[in-house]
Amino acid sequence: MGLPGVDEATARRLTEDAVQRLHRLHGWTPGADARRTLGETLDHGGFVGRDALLAEVEKLAALDRDGIVARRVLDGLAALAQDAPSLARADVPVHADCHWGNWLARDRRVTALLDFEWARLGEPMDDWFFLIRFSGPHREAVLDVVAGATETSPATLRQECEVREASCLTSDLRVALQRPATPARVVAENVRDLEELVVDRPWWR
Image (cartoon, rainbow, N blue to C red):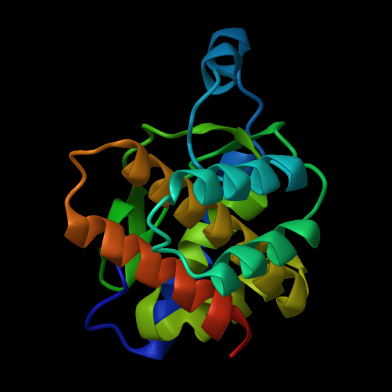
């Protein structure tokens, strides 16, 4: 994860390979049994729509009795949610966890995608988010490759990725606050990541 020890040219080549493999996955027409499995309801924490994200923000605010999440962060989350698409598609097979830690590569070429535990029906953007978000110092290069390969504007990719990260982080922190046994360090890390996303807006730097 984060493409450690990889130069930009290699990151671009790996991304091109990964996008091709994901295109094949997204274009696959699953049979009845596979579609039934992929269509099962998962609490994946990803983006499903504006109303669902707003509801997550409200749940988080209600659970945060100690006020560990700053008001400006909650307000910023609500603003992101208001600008989010009303609904995400759920008709394309997606891996839904294709960060770089789940790819195998050899000689600067991708050879396999692993760990289909979270595979489900979604939309291609669910996979582009994981590919871009977890590319470490090569985020801009990976975003550029994905934008070209999918004919999607960089601005659209940034907005869609930002709202997906907001959904994941909000869900993670909500779950952490619901579990009394969650270590304080984990909660603090979740709060820090959420504040960085909302206040620093790294997707637009």
